[in-house]
Length: 121
Image (tube, rainbow, N blue to C red):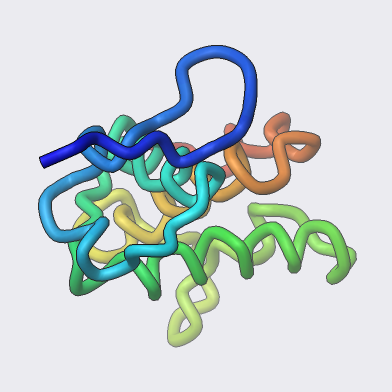
Protein backbone atom coordinates (compact mmCIF):
# COMPACT_ATOMS: atom_id res chain seq x y z
CA UNK A 1 0.00 0.00 0.00
CA UNK A 2 1.36 3.42 -0.94
CA UNK A 3 1.47 6.08 1.71
CA UNK A 4 -0.26 9.24 0.55
CA UNK A 5 0.78 12.61 1.87
CA UNK A 6 -2.31 14.60 2.74
CA UNK A 7 -0.97 17.90 1.51
CA UNK A 8 0.12 21.21 2.83
CA UNK A 9 3.60 22.59 2.99
CA UNK A 10 6.33 22.76 5.53
CA UNK A 11 7.37 20.26 8.16
CA UNK A 12 6.04 16.83 8.82
CA UNK A 13 2.52 16.60 7.47
CA UNK A 14 0.57 13.55 8.60
CA UNK A 15 0.14 10.68 6.16
CA UNK A 16 -2.77 8.29 5.85
CA UNK A 17 -0.55 5.68 7.48
CA UNK A 18 -0.28 7.89 10.59
CA UNK A 19 -4.03 7.75 11.19
CA UNK A 20 -5.70 5.15 13.41
CA UNK A 21 -7.02 2.07 11.60
CA UNK A 22 -10.30 2.69 9.80
CA UNK A 23 -10.15 6.49 9.78
CA UNK A 24 -8.75 6.87 6.24
CA UNK A 25 -11.23 4.31 4.92
CA UNK A 26 -14.17 6.05 6.60
CA UNK A 27 -13.05 9.50 5.49
CA UNK A 28 -10.97 9.03 2.31
CA UNK A 29 -10.99 12.76 1.56
CA UNK A 30 -9.67 13.73 5.00
CA UNK A 31 -7.74 16.99 4.90
CA UNK A 32 -4.35 17.54 6.48
CA UNK A 33 -5.99 19.78 9.10
CA UNK A 34 -8.56 17.09 9.94
CA UNK A 35 -5.80 14.48 10.14
CA UNK A 36 -3.91 16.77 12.52
CA UNK A 37 -7.07 16.94 14.64
CA UNK A 38 -7.35 13.14 14.76
CA UNK A 39 -3.72 12.86 15.84
CA UNK A 40 -4.09 15.65 18.43
CA UNK A 41 -7.16 13.93 19.87
CA UNK A 42 -5.23 10.68 20.06
CA UNK A 43 -2.36 12.41 21.90
CA UNK A 44 -4.88 13.77 24.40
CA UNK A 45 -6.28 10.26 24.97
CA UNK A 46 -9.42 10.28 22.81
CA UNK A 47 -9.61 7.30 20.48
CA UNK A 48 -10.90 8.27 17.04
CA UNK A 49 -12.13 5.41 14.85
CA UNK A 50 -13.65 5.05 11.43
CA UNK A 51 -17.06 4.89 13.10
CA UNK A 52 -16.55 8.10 15.11
CA UNK A 53 -14.33 10.26 12.91
CA UNK A 54 -17.10 12.34 11.30
CA UNK A 55 -18.80 13.14 14.63
CA UNK A 56 -15.45 13.73 16.33
CA UNK A 57 -14.35 16.25 13.69
CA UNK A 58 -17.74 17.92 14.01
CA UNK A 59 -17.20 18.24 17.78
CA UNK A 60 -13.86 19.95 17.16
CA UNK A 61 -15.12 22.31 14.47
CA UNK A 62 -18.31 23.16 16.38
CA UNK A 63 -16.27 23.98 19.46
CA UNK A 64 -14.23 26.45 17.43
CA UNK A 65 -17.30 27.90 15.76
CA UNK A 66 -18.81 28.59 19.20
CA UNK A 67 -15.59 30.20 20.45
CA UNK A 68 -15.23 32.37 17.36
CA UNK A 69 -18.87 33.30 16.83
CA UNK A 70 -20.83 32.54 19.98
CA UNK A 71 -19.33 34.97 22.44
CA UNK A 72 -18.53 32.12 24.84
CA UNK A 73 -15.42 30.49 26.24
CA UNK A 74 -14.59 26.81 26.73
CA UNK A 75 -15.71 26.77 30.35
CA UNK A 76 -19.17 27.85 29.22
CA UNK A 77 -19.59 25.20 26.54
CA UNK A 78 -17.90 22.27 28.32
CA UNK A 79 -20.98 21.79 30.50
CA UNK A 80 -23.27 18.82 31.05
CA UNK A 81 -26.65 19.77 29.56
CA UNK A 82 -28.59 17.87 32.22
CA UNK A 83 -26.80 19.09 35.34
CA UNK A 84 -25.41 22.43 34.21
CA UNK A 85 -22.09 21.45 35.79
CA UNK A 86 -18.71 21.24 34.06
CA UNK A 87 -18.09 18.02 32.14
CA UNK A 88 -16.49 15.34 34.28
CA UNK A 89 -13.06 13.80 33.75
CA UNK A 90 -14.51 10.34 33.19
CA UNK A 91 -16.09 8.38 30.35
CA UNK A 92 -17.71 10.16 27.43
CA UNK A 93 -17.53 13.53 29.19
CA UNK A 94 -13.76 13.28 29.34
CA UNK A 95 -13.61 12.14 25.71
CA UNK A 96 -15.72 15.15 24.70
CA UNK A 97 -13.35 17.48 26.55
CA UNK A 98 -10.36 15.84 24.85
CA UNK A 99 -12.00 16.33 21.44
CA UNK A 100 -12.78 19.95 22.28
CA UNK A 101 -9.15 20.57 23.25
CA UNK A 102 -7.90 18.89 20.07
CA UNK A 103 -10.33 21.00 18.06
CA UNK A 104 -9.03 24.20 19.59
CA UNK A 105 -5.42 23.16 19.07
CA UNK A 106 -6.08 22.32 15.43
CA UNK A 107 -8.92 24.46 14.11
CA UNK A 108 -8.70 27.65 16.18
CA UNK A 109 -5.31 27.80 17.91
CA UNK A 110 -5.86 31.49 18.63
CA UNK A 111 -8.10 30.26 21.49
CA UNK A 112 -5.63 27.71 22.89
CA UNK A 113 -5.15 29.82 26.00
CA UNK A 114 -8.61 28.55 27.05
CA UNK A 115 -7.72 24.84 27.02
CA UNK A 116 -6.82 25.04 30.71
CA UNK A 117 -10.48 25.82 31.43
CA UNK A 118 -11.27 22.20 30.54
CA UNK A 119 -9.27 20.99 33.54
CA UNK A 120 -8.12 17.86 31.73
CA UNK A 121 -6.42 15.28 33.95
